[in-house]
Figure (cartoon, rainbow, N blue to C red):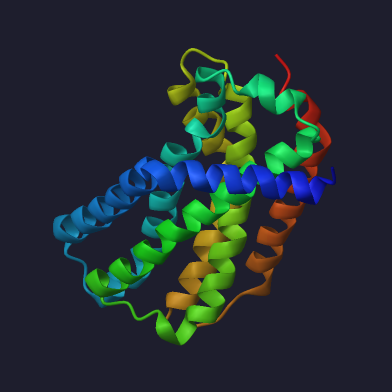
Length: 224
């Protein structure tokens, strides 16, 4: 079985499992709406302040939503002992990790589809004029986030305190990703929107480095 075929099967399995319950999606969507709404009522920012704090708010909200969503990615396999079936399947370790990464990317993208319009309405920050560039930044940042998050989910799956361990592992590593993501988003929200290629290059570099690392280390992630 090819890697692409195996990854597609794992991806479909993850999507079907989530669509049956929608627990993670519903919980994460409610979480991001509550966070964005509470910040709006707590600080009541004007347009200038919203443009200044908005990028950081978006990415911090996505980071914590990802921590909430990514934690069960491999933990549920340990709880149900299905991790052994995955190991015995005629698929490489990379195909399993890749399938789960793509599924997590889809789920987090759905959350962003809800988050961005809610943020735009509540904070009076128009996103339609820069939508194409914003989607690019969101995709690059989200891809890096789910790659690292899925890997750390596999690493922490066997730990007793995995719910606490994943955020502790994830937050420090995300700094090199969040910095260019926030700065690039802030450039799009400025009075004269512009996309700095430096921040874009840093996002691409982060994605390439950590995706390559996940490919090289995937055999160790699913070991006992």
